[in-house]
Image (cartoon, rainbow, N blue to C red; front, side, top):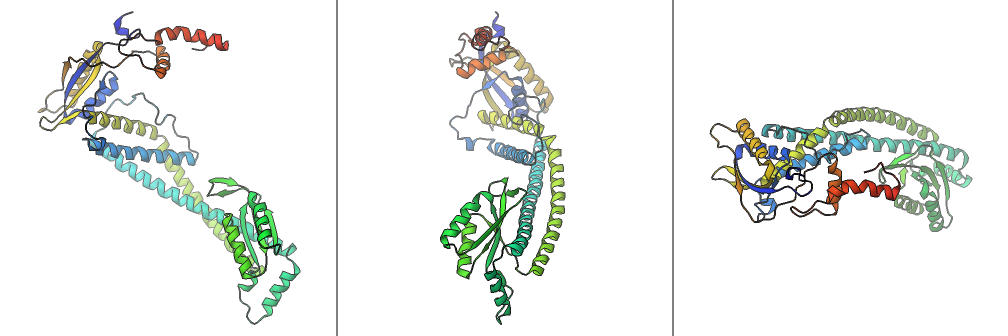
Length: 423
């Protein structure tokens, strides 16, 4: 087995030193990264990460990544299928580096997208809250009608009549002896038990199940709810009832005891619910249209930004020589691939360099440092190599355990599970 294959033992490595003109530094690092044949050394270990030369560019790209994650989360919330492997795709499928002007344009356009989607999402959420609130109000009004028709005790009716005949009667007096609202169905027994013990049975509690599940914004899910009516006497007692209901996250609503006024309330609620539903449908349609367009491109956007961020992270490892207007980089390259790296750098110099700039210079460096381990793999050996590396990476030029594993693993798998087809 030849050394060029670098599977039995790791490939022989050589340290190189690069002098890269500043104006083509990004393009050069991008080309080297696309080759996957060099491991850069950090020449700025003594410099804090936040004090390095290109930290502002990395912060800007990190913010763009955050904005893309926000857009992806919005697509997930609205059940719009985003392309798979938004972040985990490590294959360098993008062959050209983004120009500085394009990078600035991406940052500004991403900010506009985030503002637009955030505005629509906030509007949709607020409208949904109002819609759910009106639906609950509608249910309470309907349930209260039934309560007044069938379940109101005679003494409470007499109280309303007496209040109506008194000289001090006002519009609120008839509604002071009952409270209406909506609460999670699982809390109905708790509410009833607490009220019964606190008020010592001085109340009448009626509840009705709401057929459709309603969205609970606190728990972020649809849950079963009940509407309820609580009859009692005295403002102090009713105040206690309100506090107990609110402590159990109940939503309280004002319902008039007068059937005519209650009918007017129902008409108003129905009109508001119709208007809000129409606006909500329009808002959601616009938001979904925006997100569907974003979903077709966000995979490529995230890959591009991830690669650009990686380029600047490598540039932060290089020594920035202001006098020579160049980046000085050091790294390890497989000895057999030095010519490939040299040819790529020469092509990069011809393609991107200006007339007055010097070409990229690569020097071989003799050193006593221990080189990194590099095993060349193909489609077959890549999986076995990754499995062995997960337990520990061999030292430089040590015998590679992945080679015998490629033969023994399928056999041992068959011994353990009786399935020879794996491996």
